[in-house]
Length: 83
Image (cartoon, rainbow, N blue to C red; front, side, top):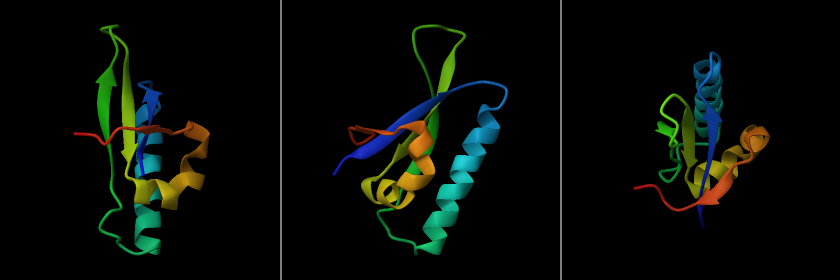
């Protein structure tokens, strides 16, 4: 099973959006029990443009399976396991 990821561009609202995603997924984790493989995190990333960045979200297979409905508008894609 793959991890999943998506990115949102850094804007005036990106911190608010990121907090909402974190909060919703954490609530889901609590509601459904604390499975040890339920992991997600976010980090800042950038492309080659120095003044443009993203907030990248990564979800373990368990976290994605439990939060897919919460994330659908962001179109997560399978990715390699983050290191």
